[in-house]
Structure formats: C-alpha cells, structure tokens
Length: 297
Image (cartoon, rainbow, N blue to C red; front, side):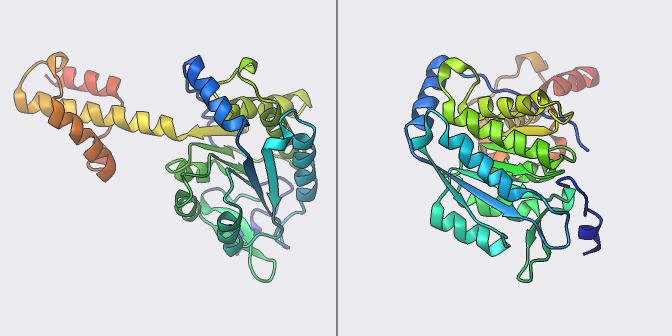
C-alpha cells in the first residue's frame, strides 16, 4: 500500500517515446477501413479512481468520448459501454459480457508495479501488466486496441502488445486535462476516419490526432502518449532470430557470412525458435550480428 500512496498525485501516475509506423499498401489500408468502419465496434471504458488517490475527472472523460462518437460521421458503427469503480473481477466480467474491440482504461498508473483498480472497499488494488496481458490474450481475436490513459502505463503496454495488435500508453505523468483531450481527439478521429485522411490504419490515424489535439490545446504533453504494435514486435524478433540462426550456420559450415542461405528446415526453425524463445539472450539486431561476425572472422 506504500507504493500506492507514493503515487497519490494530481496526474495520472520516464521512458523514451516509441512512436513507429507500419506502412501498408493502399489496398490493405482500404480493406482495413472497410472492416473497421462497416462493422459495429464496441468500446469498453474501464474507469478506476480508488478512494485514497487524487480525484480524476473520469466521468467527464467518458462523457467527452461519448460526445465525440455521437457527433462523428460513422457514429452508428460504434457502441460505447462503461463500467464504474472497476475491480479486477469486473474487467473479466465486462470482457465476457461485451466482447469489446477497444478497451479503454482511465485512472492511475504506478509504473512497473501496475495499474490501480479498486478493491471491495473502494481502495486501490494494483494489477500488473502481465496479469492484464494474460487476460486480454484470451480475447486477442476480438480486441484490436487497448488504450491505457494513465500515468507511466508504457510499462504495461510492453506485456499487452505481445497479444494485442495496438496498445497505447503513457511514457510519463499526464495531467487530467491532457488525458481527456487525447481521448476526445482519438475517438473523434475514429468516428470520422476514411482512407483519404491518411494514416496506415484508423487506430494509427486516431493516435496521431489524439497527440495533435493535446498540442493544439497548448499542453506540453503531446509526446507522452506512445503506441506499440504487435507486428513490430514480431518483425523485430524474427530479424533477431534470423541473425542468430545465420550465425550458427556460418559457424557450422565455415563459409562467409554473406553466403549464408537458410534452407527450408532452417526457415522452419525460425518459427520454432520464436515460439520457444530459445537463446533469447543471444538475439541481437541483424546489423549488429553482421558486424560482430565479420569482426570475429
């Protein structure tokens, strides 16, 4: 509980922003748009403001999200559901009941220690990112995006993005007004999104709009929101695995690294290594692997 009390601040809680972009062909963007904008999307908002923490305007955040969607072009494509005073067990029940496409948490974050939900008495109860990731992973075929509108929630995104395509968090403390502004801009952009507006996907366009909205209002926290994507993680791991396997082939076959060609069996091994996370401590970026091997040989 001491850890909780240490974070009784006015904000919603330092890391380096990790904004990277995934490029797709225009046809893929259009397909994503059709799937996203012409299928009913359920947004589940999970507010939590335990009694011993600073008061946040979470009710206002929910109202702003509702108004942003109601005034949008594709308002009929979204269904907003919200709980109040969320306890850990409420998350599980809400996911089962509403089967949301977007999960939005708003409240307090406590860095690596987790997010603050409520216990049976209304006091704070920490839930770690690994626990949330395990739960969201059970709904990975349904959930497209998780938005953690809380201070220092970047730590939780690291675990959740292993299962969910898009995860948004905060790399620092964020004030109440800036957090609400980001959420409003994000959902407003989702409700109006069309391919010609730009962005690799509706979620990425909405994220950029949310950051821009913070800056437009004059807040200095427009770089606080960060977005992580599951596809990036897969690509980074695949690259590192390929580098490691190529190095092993180089050593066993005693041939120049540039001539290493992975056969079908070795290509299959990439998936096996990735799944088992074998030799994770040896995985390094491909460019570093090439340099290291050339120096040693």
